[in-house]
Length: 380
Image 1 (cartoon, rainbow, N blue to C red):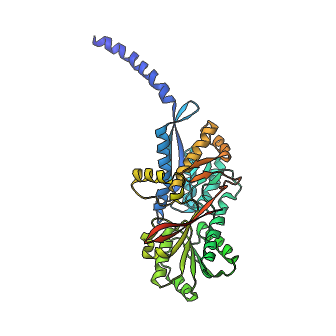
Image 2: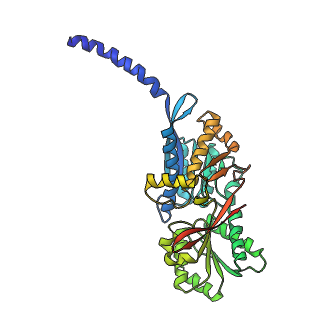
């Protein structure tokens, strides 16, 4: 009996394998890349972006995704660019080598722009959830897309606010990055076109600065009504706080890099003097905002910083292009991108010929007792 069982074993094993193999062959892992700063002073923003993308990947896998006759298992290939342009190009090349079918990222304009050439050369779609510098989509690449408004819209929206609020004298400061300087230049240009609004000075610092007292002392003598700061919350928060310490009463105007839930931890009670913009719809105004926030909090047990809903929708946009193409070939996915017509968490997403949004929105905020509060929504 023992010998009989031994003889039967290879046959039963072969039968089991023949049943299992088709199931295994029908599944395929497909990688979607994500890049953001996961280390450094704005790692909290990078992790927020990654969380949004991860939530989408997990949700799609749970629902099940079929392309052709294969069950697709999505895998998020998450890379850290440290908000550094050189590290960003290394991360981009790593994703190309990993054979991702699309990329959500990068967070910063200063990293998205240099990385975009690598994705373009590889023919892989890149959707930035938060890069606002116009140059990103003006390079002639067919691979670059974004799901936020640009600084050409964000800068003028803040200048319009300053003018309508009766602020007459403004000073401009930027952190010398592609994002910070780009936004500051757009604000300055728009402000100079407003009658009665005067730009007194334009100063530059850097994105690693922690002491702004020399610049602020110079600014205090000019007695401006507002200071525009182009940069991220890690430096913008300190800038606003140090301005208050020096008893500067000017409003601090800033873009989306500063406009985070984390700002109150950095600027302390000086947040109540900040007016900032977001290059997209406010979470509470998004069609799927409330439901997304609930899912996000349940999964990650931390509040949304700013652009997690945008990375979430960006993953879905790539997957929907994959479905239309009925292929996991990056070239075929890319061909379907111009046909994007999604109503998702962030609202309607349609792209123009450059990869920019057709109907961008700017949201303006202030802070009350350290809590970010919506002031106004501007459709561009």
